[in-house]
Length: 191
Image 1 (cartoon, helix red, strand yellow):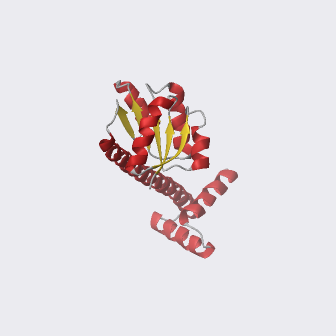
Image 2 (cartoon, rainbow, N blue to C red; image 1 turned 90 degrees about the vertical axis):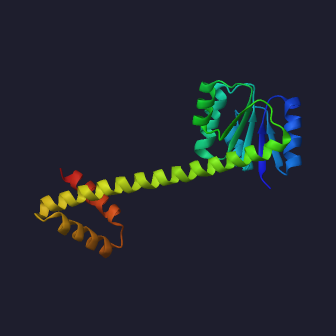
Image 3 (cartoon, rainbow, N blue to C red; image 1 turned 30 degrees about the vertical axis):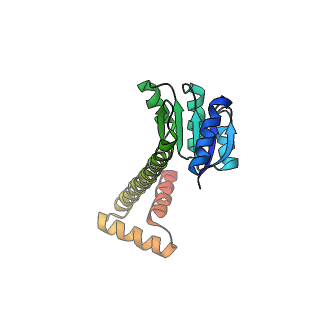
């Protein structure tokens, strides 16, 4: 059962949404009136999904979503009455997984939430893959610098420099990238 946190300043509008969520099998764990403490609430309550119901997402709302997404990323579904393309773009850039204009019938609530969770998981996977690729690229650049320093200082070719790095890393029980970083830092201190 997914744990849901609702954010809406209109209690009358929230009642039917909350009942629909309960009827669909979700656990509603909290109701916030605004997004001011969204990050803190997500940190404390750890909802599986956040549903924000608003007439139109304000700049403050989008900024609070960005902060929460940086610290406590989770799927966000936004129900709104603002179908402006620019607002949709800003909301999705802030971290909204599903942007729904207008009211939604009970029978469509679960598919919308499922789609938001799936989209969130896909982006989470892509972010992880991008971070790993950037780390590998950074490591590769440092290794190349260290090889260049060894080649210049020892007057050896690239293959010998890499073999030397690999051998030194094994002797010190280190990753080649970490050793390369130490070599580059040491060279910068001497120059």
